[in-house]
Length: 318
Ligand code: MTE
Image (cartoon, rainbow, N blue to C red):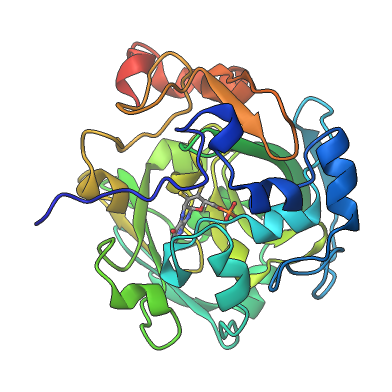
């Protein structure tokens, strides 16, 4: 296979002034004079809603887990996306994913479980009390945001299917449907988008099965109707629009690790000390901020998750 060329337009891999194309920069409302000018500009086509849209979800409790930081505005979270099934430009998913059919939607949970099942989204939404969790979110491309997700711990779903003692990993698969997902017609990635976690990572209380954002159902561009969020890992670990979970004994081959094994590992734990081969991971750019800030080990969640890797060199868990 020809070597994959990543699309890093709009990423942190380039110098400060050029990492976001000017259009994106204005749209995200950078601080200062440029931000003031931006508010007077008309929104680009497909920029999405200014305010949260979609059905309101019943949220039973709220957990603030981003050190008190203000969430990134809805508009930025929903118009600056990675969802290659709808194109490689950050603006593509908001423009192209709106027609994704999210009902009916069934999640197959199978493999090393005692109670393999196909579960409808309506049942999933009622499986456990929904929580709002405000988490930091760090993309491997060195941009970041703070997101009020809505969901419940993935462990709630996994314990219902009763994993066997051979279940060492969980594999997550995105919908495969070329008719709905035009990006799947191109071979930029191997489809379906596949990710995985070790079973103890999947059962960790921080790992969220997310169904919403800002108190509303997830917009398609953010992975409707359900996706996985592991806030201590780079964003690519969280597969969107999931239709299948498979519990397996062997470490799975995952999409980015397959495409560029020297660039993306299986673990994808946020670590400022381990650079990507083509850029530093020491700092990151919060959407909407001008200056870069330091990246935190495990994205600031070391107290909660470092124990999962006791005795292992965190540098090797990239
Ligand atoms: N899931 C699928 N199916 N396809 C993708 O291209 N991109 C990943 C992840 N999950 C991706 C995906 C990457 S690289 C990131 S950073 C996050 O989704 C982006 O999530 P967001 O658009 O909600 O910010």
